[in-house]
Image 1 (cartoon, rainbow, N blue to C red):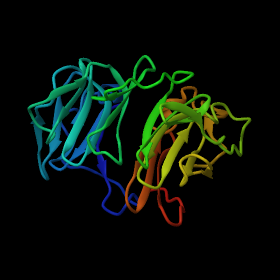
Image 2: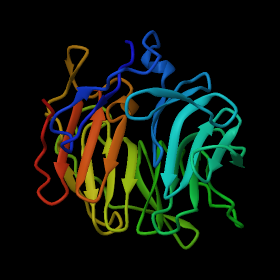
Image 3: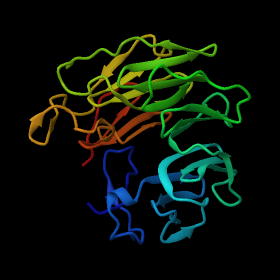
Image 4: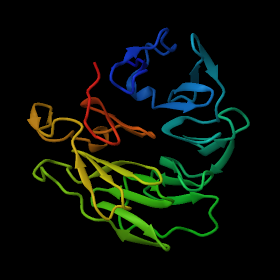
Length: 275
């Protein structure tokens, strides 16, 4: 599959292709691992370590950190982080100079919602660390697939569910309420997003919301829960593509994955598929 960039100006109800498209028309989807949104605009990152930023009517080549881009990005205020083959690089503005905050090759990165410059890193080897932290974090019992913050607390998720970091020790979260436990990967947490009051956990099957630090969960079904993949009932054979993105804003939740895109107001949580 080749790559195209779309945008929505009505909170995910309608999408239209950006015109002109970035100069990557021949690129496959696995060669374009990420979009990076900063105050300067939206930048398309390619796996070979290049980037193009959209400046209203044209795409301008962007000078990012050295190395190949692995897909994980993050922003907190003016601070921007990009996972590269040389480690996690940070910048004060999304522009040079870039500084390597950690040599870890990262699978996921997440800024602390309570401390804007604290950056948690999930390594490709399953390790969990915080850039610049004076003390080492305890190793989770099993390698996680996702990492995120909510209310200044660090969370990790994986095939076994969810854990919360409490006083330098990992504590098991409440079990996810599975309405369709017979489906493959229904409890495998693959994406986490959070803010001061809400934590979202995406699995191979559904989306879950907690407003009390993972002590209880509400199951959400952005897509039809009778998923069909490769002609058979069940989740994707690779659960990490079930939800490739989860975006949490002040007003809305937007999810994207193999089944498409869906958005909902944080208050009503009534899901809308774009037209």
